[in-house]
Image (tube, rainbow, N blue to C red; front, side):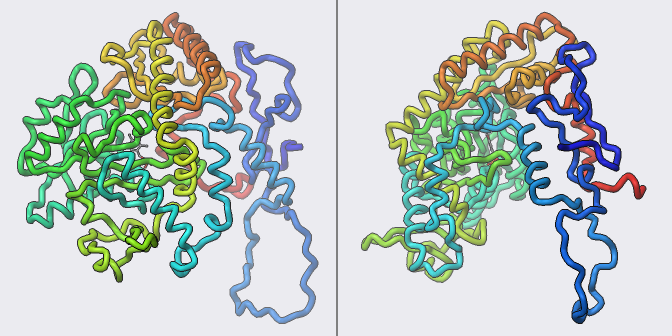
Length: 523
Ligand SMILES: *Cc1c(COP(=O)(O)O)cnc(C)c1O
């Protein structure tokens, strides 16, 4: 039982002032199975200990004056108390294994348990990157097989497997482009990025030392081809384009964009985070893309978003492949998969690598999960993933667009995500109020205020794994909160009512985070 302790912690009562969540006050602050939970320091205090060790008798002190003189200052919980603390906290969280997670641009999809089982097999989970190559042939086979699938699915020439997330893959692709430009003695300064781009795109370009310039969008939410063409010139190293883009739309002019960029001597980087909408349907290589990262943790399942690491392999065109980083895997005619590193790069005709992205080979656990996902779906199953993801998003779009304004609803079907704005809301109510009201309905909110090109944006991505019944329930919840926002239901300003905590000062928390606990008694 988590009773208030000596440091004076009092459970916050979640009962709403207007009685929406009324009921008897409980002594503990718990509400049936929803348990209140203080900080671990407040729970235990630092002057207790969870274990009893006998006093040390006799024996020489061999710490040479380095022994601790002050108390250690950590909460003294026993093992069961510690386990309960973190389990109680975990129950206040929302997770993909609890319900629909509609975050657009993040692709939070169900992770089949088969992937987890495969990734935990000792032959994959317990290998070490410094083991002799002869003892990890199976792991190298997995990396190489996955690389083959990624090249095949994207219609590209090569792939760098080592980048550890989408943003890391972007950097890898841009460094390949820089190496290719330098190799031909034509360093350039500018990278063009659309206004609707994910923040990592301009950040990557700037990090790699380029000047970032915006490309405007046209009225239907896509890149303005004429404006792009007008800006191209000998100073433009690359354009970075997300396709499908962050408005949830397919960039239909992609081939024309690539042709224009190539004619001006630049390269085309495609942000492939949304590849799940087109996998098995479109090959970016056919659209003239030179480099594209694939977020294995979005398109090919694998847990992420606080749940685990990411993985961002980058597929490369023939023009960029020679500059791809080490190490990588290569199969020789005898069928053996080799690891190509600095010492044997010449044997594999790969002497122009720009360097390395990581110490070792990348995220092995993500590789096994992604390959398990790919092999269990097969090529036809992956095509169906894209079709179902797009179908589900369009079902949501068309089911709520009479209540939630869809700024590009007239631009044709959306891809894997549906974009809405706050245009029809009553004065004084915002996207934030709608999102907080959705929490009371038991859903994690959608992505809010992104992309920046739409006022009060709400970006909803259901993914392919949601059933029609699951979507219908979500749509009913979304319609209800949208109706309340249109009608001017002022109670939404106080939502959520039923969450363990109500509204927090998110700005203050971001600007002045308090990351270390200090004992109020000693202050
Ligand atoms: C998620 C995402 C990224 C960044 O990928 P990370 O794996 O989070 O680094 C880049 N662009 C878009 C469009 C994304 O959705």
